Amino acid sequence: MALQPIADDPSIKHFETALADLYAHKFAKAAKGFEKVLEKSDRRQLSDRARQFLALCASRTDDENEVDPYLAAVHAQNAGDFDAARAICDAQAKKDDDGRFAFIAAAAAALAGDGDAAVAHLETAIARDPHTRVHAFHDPDFDALRSRDDFKQLLAASSGRGAA
Image 1 (cartoon, rainbow, N blue to C red):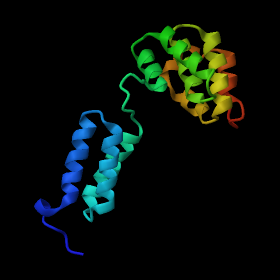
Image 2 (image 1 turned 180 degrees about the horizontal axis):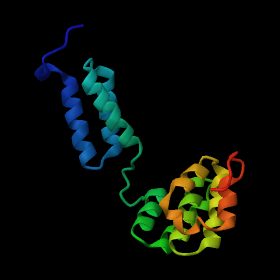
Image 3 (image 1 turned 90 degrees about the horizontal axis):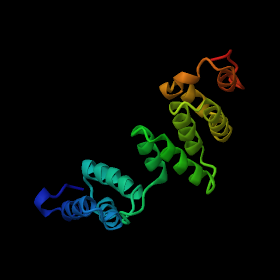
Image 4 (image 1 turned 120 degrees about the vertical axis):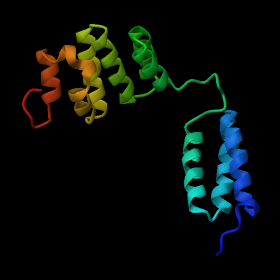
């Protein structure tokens, strides 16, 4: 199938409209536009870009008041508001068993100087996702805990390695 000139390609118009909706934070509407591009376009680069933007739309919501709790916790921790990060993580932990929140709570506790809480949260995070052990091993947020025996044992447990 021969490619149409760009000016005659309706997929370009769908893409432009979807992109405008994306920039206006109308993610559901933008997603429908990018889906049309994927249905109609025979241009690989345009389709690839539409897939990328479609994935972005899927991760967003049209309700600007709705905040992703994971991103809010990370933002609070990065801003140095460790109490807020821990509060978000504690609230989320009551809703589901997503280990990411336990990991953020552990890092926030470690950065706030609460080693006991950090180790307890990290133990929960590792129980929910064993890969977390590797992340904690390399994460500088836990540097203050590296000399603690309970932290070393937690990182070494079931890893087949000696103490961290």
